[in-house]
Image 1 (cartoon, rainbow, N blue to C red):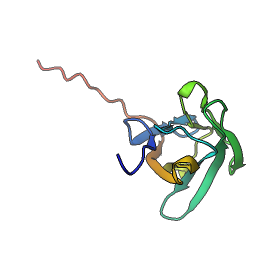
Image 2: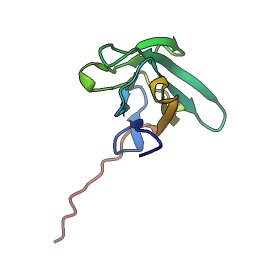
Image 3: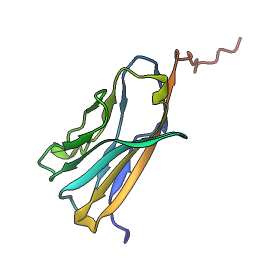
Length: 140
């Protein structure tokens, strides 16, 4: 549409449950009809007490992988690749702690589209153990 074409997606699940001490992939991909140049991305974290940028970086163009500029936490790894049009800027968060529970926002800004920006948010809930969900209801 006239508002531009930059889209950011964190997939279908907006809430992710993960076990204390484990690792979790927070997915994020972006797409742009016009292509991109020096695209800026960041992941930020917030809950009621705090808000901070976890990682940010630049993707030069669709032939280069993302380059990380700032990383707040050693437990974070950028898993993404932007070559071959996957445009993936997902992060892996390891050694989860209960205090990691909160909102994780993947933000992207594309200078090529007049600095158009967009973002998508995942809520991460760190739990003691995952409840077993039985999707098969047996009727006797």
